[in-house]
Length: 276
Length: 309
Ligand SMILES: Nc1ncnc2c1ncn2[C@@H]1O[C@H](COP(=O)(O)OP(=O)(O)O)[C@@H](O)[C@H]1O
Ligand SMILES: [Mg+2]
Image (cartoon, rainbow over all chains, first blue to last red; front, side, top):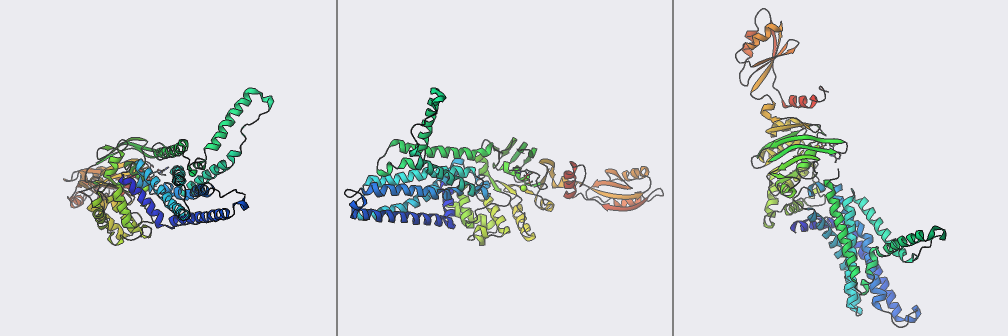
């Protein structure tokens, strides 16, 4: 436990003794602050004259503003996330300190959990910024507590899941830049799938000439493919939770996601025993 | 303290280390000597648990590295080649981190870090950023982090590489002072270093042990040799030399040169002059031929190349 915390503390101290940490947190604060101000102002405008914006009566604050804003923050964490996770293990490798890390009396799990904890620490720093925004809203109006708490929880789960993916990529890569680019590419693919997946047609028609069996097969695989495209993206499972609706399958998705990628990270670190 | 048998490490098509076997006893300082690419670092990386061996067994302090890596790592202080470190950290913060990771009790961390810095002459550098340390101090930092936790075994990969002569002397002194308390395995490709620091040498070449023995034995043991140059028929010269009381061995080197071996401390030169002062032969020269480690090294390294290059 102490070793895990030592690894975590060292990682965080490196993060904040170089400009990287400040740049990342600063960028997050700036973009999320801007998004918050814009949506808040827009919402205020709508409440002044709902009819002008096509609403009958004053729309729901949580539904129109809070939940989408929290989901946006999650996207933002994942957008900036590669910059956090790329250093975790790949940097140890690229500067040769992996040789120290792996010859100190540390177990793999102490290294991996220490690193993962450090990335969660930065996620929590980002979430502190978001919670300041939530307090500001709270000063002006009542906010449904379920939306607030579960929204923040969803944000945390989504970010934590993404960090585990980033950690895994960082465990594979030889240089932080490779890790960062790869992780970013994964986020981007997930984002694109999440955005366009819903528009995929439910059925894929194949030419009649191919016969019933073939077309049933195609139909079957298309169904699986479509389901995956819709269900896999990380942001997909926080939409409901951000509105205060907790579904066990959403929580299970994130927990399994983290467990899966931490497991792969262990395997990747262990691979030194059989590779080369 | 360290036991290695049949150690082999293969990287793809390169065999970095082949069937290495040696032992290091408690409290010894052993020099690992070999040209660049000989496999010194590879062996050390296996002993510290950083890379697994392809085959063979390595034990440190009685523990199998493969089976009990943590037990071994607790007992080994390792200074890797080129001293990797976290550039942005303060020297003292880095060493405190090392102490925590090595499981130094919380209350002792300050004292332990202070002791290691003191010992390595890093006292004035506590609040420097690692990146800004000069080469000499970075090397000391490498040694200091290895010493943290007071591990009984120290494995130092080229601890004096890239230092200026004054710094080299300091570091050597430091390593020598570690001796009875710690078991030290250090690698180097600098010959005199081994002569000055180590009690025993393992000469390694192309991943194989070319020679291993104490400094004393490698450089001739209890005997010393002279090279005698004389004119005349060797059939008459050799028996005359052999007839001298203290001479234990005579070798004919060709070209009128002979090697005469005698016990260390016995001067046989006078006897040789007398023995060869007849009419059939004449003495032309006598030269002391102490076998230096350099001779041993060149012989050992050249052996498998079929001669000196
Ligand atoms: N990670 C590696 N992958 C491939 N070859 C390696 C690796 N490490 C070392 N080698 C090779 O193994 C041999 C021994 O290297 P090394 O142990 O570093 O030598 P030394 O430390 O004695 O100079 C060299 O030929 C080197 O190229
Ligand atoms: Mg080397």
